[in-house]
Every structure is written in structure tokens, then in C-alpha cells.
Length: 314
Image 1: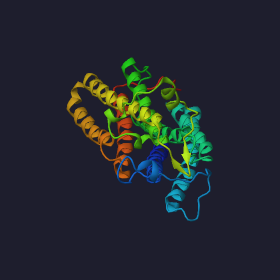
Image 2: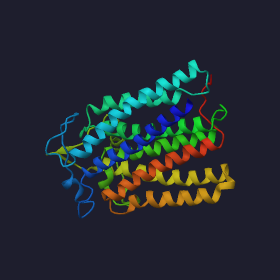
Image 3: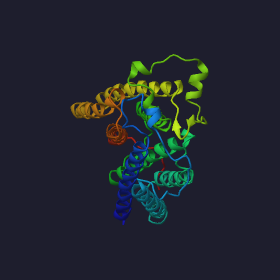
Image 4: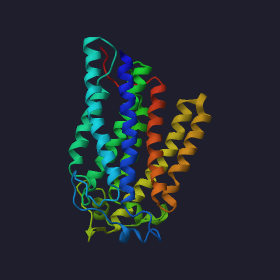
């Protein structure tokens, strides 16, 4: 009977991947990233519906994609609830070694995303888009870890300091990327050196204020110095993260150092160009997919090392 739980988790995982990629593409294609010349055209080309809510305008050119995303999200909500109920039932009634913490996280995150979806898209408050983006990554990661736990259960040893540090750094790196996207900071600069603008402390503080509001004129984004600091911070974190991940994989998995090195090089090739090259929709979409792949690969590596979350078993 455990096979039913595995299949349901796999379906939920595939749905989470599809929704995350689809949501990112819809948002990116609305942002004016394909304008020319980049990046000076960005502030003028950006245009988006200022009225948030669950309704979809009849003349929306992406109406089909938005309706598909809403349908997938509704289906996912049902599956997330069933997954939590089945995991709880297997653990309580059949006395199986099934963890309910991760299904609970998936269901709770789904509820939060459903509530936030009522005010999406919110042009003025980046925190809304950030929650949506991070929530999608969290759903995929939690479901992937849950599938790995069911198929190859490990001991309940607590994560080591190195593993926790990598996970935390990866989380903050992903969070900073979501903050870049939510603030439409892609158009603030072209490269790492171009982003390293000096600014007063109040400018830096305003850049990372979770309750900050974007400056919008006639439905178009206004790029200022705060976006430059947001982009600069994300670039630095991304470069540090790739370096530390390389060291972590070589030290922790010496027998797979060649595979790890090749994998990180491929992901790095997909991640880094988005910092230095023209920010087209296709390139930034690949950047987001590579970020999700990096997150899932890290979860897989840590799970393979015999470390799992400190959750009690029945």
C-alpha cells in the first residue's frame, strides 16, 4: 500500500515542478525583459496589470497559461491534502515508518500560497512575489526529500554542521534570487562591477526592507539605486555559493568528485551567464530552472550521505 503514497508524492512533485516553471515564465514574460537596448530600455518597457486578484482579464494574451496554472494549482491543493492524510494514516494505523513532517510542510505551504494567490500579482509589494517564488521551490524540495525518504529510508541522525550550513546558504541564495525577481532588479545593471554602486546606509536598508513598495509610474517600474544593491548582493551570494558547494561535494563525496565537478560546472554555466549577458526571457528562465536543479541536487546529495531531518519515526 506504500506504493500508492509514493505514486501520489511523485505526481505532486511533478506538478510542483510544472507550476514553478510555468509561474516563473508567465512573470518573466510580463516583465519586459526582451526589450532592446538592454538594460536602459527595461524601465520603459515594463508593464503589468496593477490590479491583483484571482480574476483573469479577457484580453490577457497569456490567458491560457494563467488558466492552466490555476487549474494545476487547484489539483495540487487536493493532492497535497490527500498526501498529508495518507501519510498520517500509514503512520498511525499501519505503524509504518512514514514521516508526516514533510507532507505537513507541503500542505501548510500550499495553504499559504493559496492565500497569497488571492493578491497575486501585486505590482507594488515584492514580498508577495517572493513568497510565491520561494514557496514553489520549497514545495518541490520537500516533496523530493519525502520521495527519497520513502524509497530509501535513512537513520534519524541530525544533519551535520556542514550540511546545515550549505542548506542555509542555498536557501538565502535562492531567497535573494527571488527578491531580485520580485523587485524587477534584473534591469538595474549588466554585470557584477556595474552593480557595485555605493550608497548610503538608508539606501541599503530600503533595498532589503521586506515591506518595501516599488515605485511605479503609469503602470511602469521605476529603477533606482535600491535595485542595484539587490542585484549586487544576489550576484555575490551566487558566486560564493557555487564555490562552497564545490568544496562541500569534493570533501563529502570524494568518490563522486568528478561527477560533482561536472554537474556544478554545467549548472554554473547555466547560472552565471544570466548575470553578465542580456537578460532575455529564455535565458532568465533557464537561470531559474538551473537554480531549482541545484536545490534538488543538493537535497539528493545530503540525503545520499545518510543524513535526514531530525524527525521521529513510529
